[in-house]
Image (cartoon, rainbow, N blue to C red):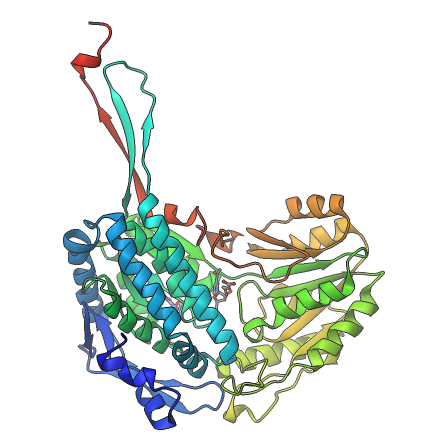
Length: 508
Ligand SMILES: NC(=O)c1ccc[n+]([C@@H]2O[C@H](COP(=O)([O-])OP(=O)(O)OC[C@H]3O[C@@H](n4cnc5c(N)ncnc54)[C@H](O)[C@@H]3O)[C@@H](O)[C@H]2O)c1
Ligand SMILES: O=CCCC(=O)O
């Protein structure tokens, strides 16, 4: 298993030299490792130390066209014509290969993205779970027989793959955001063209090598590593041979994707930004709430779309919650994700680093209290580290309350009544995840049903799992990834009407 080009990956642990060489320096189109037709490459850096990891091809529209054409041919001639069971067998093998190489993939992920290697291994397992789940679902893409209003007719619904799918994915989950889309797409019989985030192309390329080993036909999975996001994005969205775009990233870019897809009326899924409210009521178990807040806020150094962004705490337990939360936050070890002791890695890059530091300054200037942190951990040129930060007495006018922080900064707002908390929670134009902590069962249902989000965690800070539908409402997008609902985004429903059935026409 895991032979040829990637054999160095299996030796990842043995020396830094081999480790560095195991990062692919070509992209993957039509089953081949290739350079860009532009002849250009771009550099990728490790956010823990600012050092260059390597270079990958800077693909252009010519490369994109080649990848789309390969995906189109493979869709029609090889992948969609397999039975669900045949696709399932290959997907199952892909899942097994990912899990077998979990530790190697985790190190690649940590090196390019920064999250601690244990957390990265968790992401690999999480991503693989979508391949495993949808490998099973591939065998269950059922149709329907509908009751017909006319005796000499029979009506059916069949569900068919949408066709070639374009994926544009973010850097914060370089592996699982791709696999979460690839699971249902591949199971349905679709082929894919992926444009991974420019900060983190290596996890995607390593997955392709495993996909080849698993036996996907050439052209089933294609990758465009590129810094030309806007150009390639437009090309994919407007290309007539692409039937569906699935985008995970910011709301700002998601709106552009939606507008660009209008020209060819593509099916789209948008998994966009959040601004999760985390409500802690007086009846909550405070220790449990703090544990949930730690998990939700500081996962991936605060760089997840479902991270608690506004922590709303009721006045009766406000001081107790802050004291306990501060104690736990101070215990976090910040550092290089490859160091086993690290709990919090760096943030992704200089822009993100400066954005977060500005958020803290804005809150401080407007009168919030910085309880702990708020500072860079080391010189920013040697890694983008930020201490876990807690800001109390946050007002709604502050940037930490209005915008998605995407960093290890917790903003805490005091509230008095349930009505006030719900009003604040729903006051933003996005609605991905929300959390609430309460031991009052009636309150739990009252509040959960009124929160304007696609997902709600009750007395639970980590809610993502393959069995559950992941997705948002409002400007957090639409479409659902994972679960029994996840296949719907990758199939078209076709109604088939069979008429003039003489032998069943009871009127003749
Ligand atoms: N809802 C979810 O499931 C989910 C998951 C992860 C991240 N996110 C969101 O993603 C954001 C952070 O990720 P990011 O900074 O990579 O987001 P981003 O929108 O800047 O980039 C996402 C992807 O879009 C590409 N891109 C950028 N500009 C583009 C353009 N004009 N046309 C086409 N593609 C373009 C990028 O290269 C990248 O591959 C946050 O807002 C976060 O909440 C959402
Ligand atoms: O960042 C968004 C994805 C996070 C998750 O799947 O839990």
